[in-house]
Length: 144
Image 1 (tube, rainbow, N blue to C red):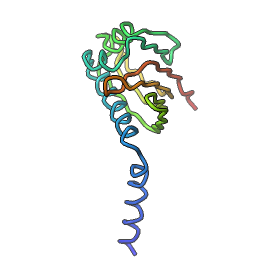
Image 2 (tube, rainbow, N blue to C red; image 1 turned 45 degrees about the vertical axis):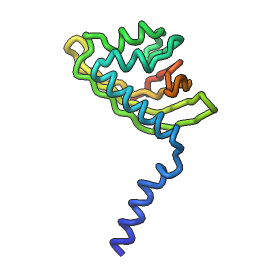
Image 3 (tube, helix red, strand yellow; image 1 turned 90 degrees about the vertical axis):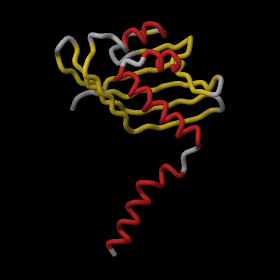
């Protein structure tokens, strides 16, 4: 009985991955790599990820283009950064994809600890064999 329960639990945990296409898995990896790049101030990764026409609206309502987004994402005033993604949903429309999810961001800003919970929508276009982000929108999750 215990073995059956373990088997069922394993299938429930793994089953959602079976239904994912290669592109969906690739976009989930891109989202996770993006989180790591942000935490490590990886300018090179962000320059490749953000399309020339990149347009971001932060959870604070500030609008960024590619250069402004990279400058803000790698600002030295943010330290001890961490980024946890959850509830990722990927929808693919040919060479375009929309990824939605939840993120929990922690960082120090000028010596003060901050945490932001938000929902996001990222829009990607596949170019030259890789996914580039053309737009992103974040919305703060209200504290209960």
